[in-house]
Length: 340
Ligand code: PLP
Ligand code: COI
Image (tube, rainbow, N blue to C red):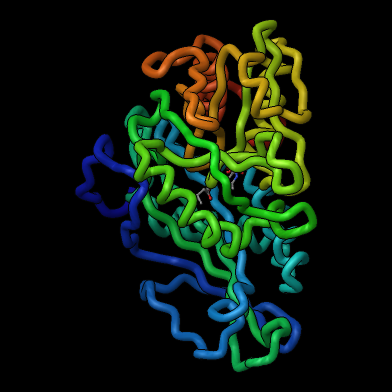
């Protein structure tokens, strides 16, 4: 079982903790090296790396879960591998073979096994794969070399309180453009979200919601999670847009809503001036899991969905099913769970 780690799992939030091992692989002269685990959490890269100047980088986020019988499992890591390669293609970076991506993750989780929180604490091991363009370069063009790295850390809830409602405000800013990089998980999208996020937090909100950049009439997503709403006739609705991140949790919830909860599902436009069509709403993502949305502030008015303090029954059912599958208490669809 490896070394014993002295962490109060129930008190974890979403903050950096240095674990023992991380994985680094280097791409040079058109090919990847074998990659290896290292203990040093510092990277030494050229001052002229494209990742530092032109934002040529991308990342992923997934989790390892401890099951009731003490085993460790991953949730749909193949989806993260595919999405990272979409991001890589968008920024002209080399692809990471899917087997290499999953093998790197398994190596990192096994090497840091003692940091995988015990079953029942609600905490998980968050895994952060990333790619950066490195090497000497000054022109606005792709890097000559790349690093693919994976590190991990134990985490608790991303939003304070976890499965407790939070309020969001609608931002006047955009995080992505219609033909931009919104659907890729690249750092620039997140750097652009710091300022609107800070404004929302200063106003007492957990984060902000972005509207579609072209018309500012439709909900896109939250800074670090997708949006869903439950209509009064119990349909699971989530925005359809080319400039939001295709959330693996969102697609999993679409499947769970349809196949496990017998709900109708809809991926379509969600208009900000029609929030009253929903009896419940939530934000979903790897870090956010499902975070119920108490209310959304738009144009000085707070629209409250189910409640600002209580979790709606459908949101709870979706959460319990997703959580059950991720922690191994409920059988997931074929291929969703990968044992470490
Ligand atoms: N949207 C954004 C902008 C995100 O950063 C994330 C987190 O990865 C998500 C949505 C949710 O995606 P996933 O469910 O794949 O974690
Ligand atoms: C995730 O949910 O994995 C994310 O990447 C969201 C945020 C921590 C950036």
